[in-house]
Length: 464
Image 1 (tube, rainbow, N blue to C red):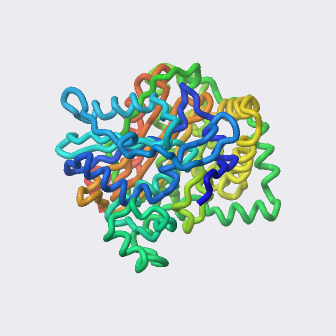
Image 2 (cartoon, rainbow, N blue to C red):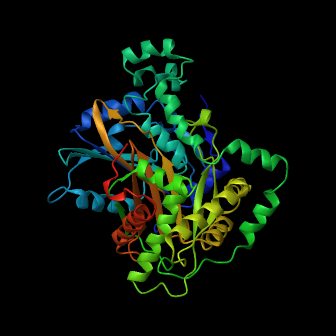
Image 3 (cartoon, rainbow, N blue to C red):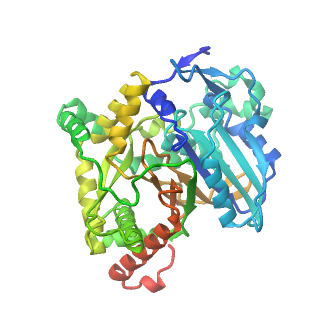
């Protein structure tokens, strides 16, 4: 095993983007229906998480030429701790705890991740996981977190197990040889979600043909600044995190089928309506035609779903908040997304990010501010597994990940589907957006009205 492994350019770029007002940390909450104690969580991580070497490595020389090195003082107790929520320990208290943690930087003297276990939450438990973006992009890290589930755990993913046999129990070590080369049903299902995003092979092929890379790069460089709205302004350290009640995925699909749109088009159209509702509620709608969002696009082939590191691009999407008709908002989003899928914008963005990791920090900071000033939000939609998962026999009730935001972007919108349900999560600057639940209210209202307009049985619709 190499003693030191340099970070790739794009991984180094995300490491250096850390700012007190916008930490490059991916945060996720997993709510369990049954209680879990901290000893069980540590046992699970020892068996299923630490097999990924990266989570036992720290960043050497983070301010110079950063490289991965095994942490000689690695101790699981320094990364996992039990905690309790104040008062009624309800959902509001959990949201407040997540918000506090989003403002707290990870300790760079050790591997850049941590987990907090709320042992007593809603008759079960909750796990708050925080992982630095330089370890991997949201798709890769989410795949890793989901692979902790009983249904997806596969020890054959860990090729270096024999170098560290003390990390896995004997029964698991004994099963590894028979599991080598086998792809479990869970692994196939888990990587399937990557296929539902923009097909990376198609985008790469277009770049090889030289058809659109130059045009995409030119677009990035020439875009004007985004509109000045309530989402723009100076950022502070304090953050707000929240999430919606669940929507039924089957119902969203039915809406999309009526208008020949994808689930993503329907949801992002509803987000446009939610922002329109929010601006109107705060008397700031006049003259706002669009709000530009940065959309991460997965460029990782499904067979590389568990390879850590960053392999994604970014595209710009203009959310049509100025349109009064909600159906027109959905169709306008669909048209833009269809055009994006025929371009090489995501590949161009990945190339830029890769280059930023090798330039002086001052140059990277200038470039990041240039690009992030062209948008007001980062938005991501990740389809998760559509069957219930368990951690050591405890059913995962719901999962909510949040996308980090770089530069001066003050709003992150994360959409995640799991077990037939979809939730919208918001992470935002507390000074710019002190009331993010109002955006959630607008989103639920927008979705209900879309269903009422397009589905005859909207009031009696049931999951299925």
